[in-house]
Image (cartoon, rainbow, N blue to C red):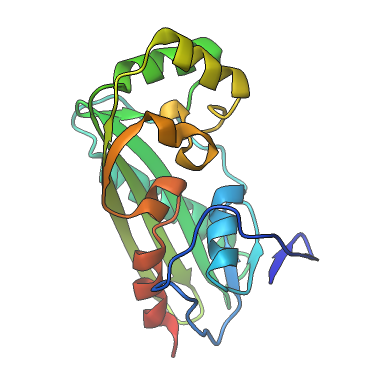
Length: 217
């Protein structure tokens, strides 16, 4: 069961099934500090009971400075999101997450507009990319904090301009790191995946379960 702004919601399974990722039984309320419907779906399908409280933060654009480590960037944003919500819900276990895509050592953020989405996709096709999700889980009352990340390697296949235009026309590139969503038609771009699939969607469920077991008592 999922609660958003005080109202219960249910939804049908649409894209994720993981036999090893069933929910962990927790003694405190669980809050997802994210407005992402994809993360919400992953938690729901794994059987967690949780509430959704989007963080009151403006998400900064990823820096292109080579000295900034992508994993550290994702972890920091995940922590800031979780901490912003945990401040108002100190007794809850709060999950924060942030996903970035890297290509040739650069952090690829969300496209600004259609032209930027075309530029991003054209750059990444036919090469190796990494999807990194920073994960932060906090419970202020018990002074517990775990900050970590998961990385998944993706090899993209070459795409011709017509295929790119067809995908862009769907609008699925909006608000997506790397300008594509693997569960919304972006899978046709992928040649192979090495690592967690749920991490590409936006929340590494295997790692999350391991982290939440530390909050069971």
